[in-house]
Length: 127
Image (cartoon, rainbow, N blue to C red; front, side, top):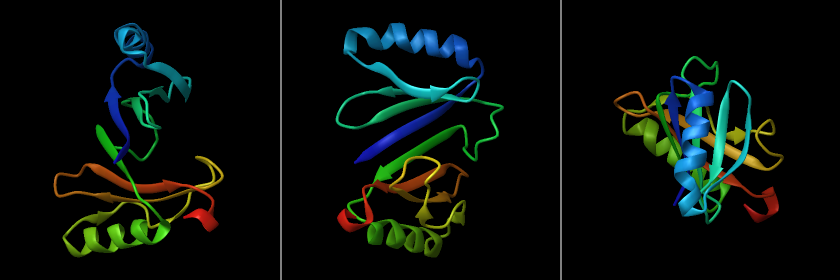
């Protein structure tokens, strides 16, 4: 399952206003974010649609997709399989406490250079 998708935008404020209005009929709402960096919209089932300022310093590409894993072993296996298939490392598997306390993820760059993530956001005993 896709956990979140992030797209780069040229004007974060303008895009936030646009998506707030466009998503209203769908019931999607602004969930969280950081001024001048990114905004995340709750699109249901624990999934997010995110917009990020193009000149942000975050290690993302113009399109970023995060796939939800069932456990940490799946995150590790995805990382190894992707590297073996020719991906480039963009962040080895490990905790990301600056995201949330239980976030565990890895990042690879696919053949076209897109940042692809496998992640789980569960306490270690549940992951």
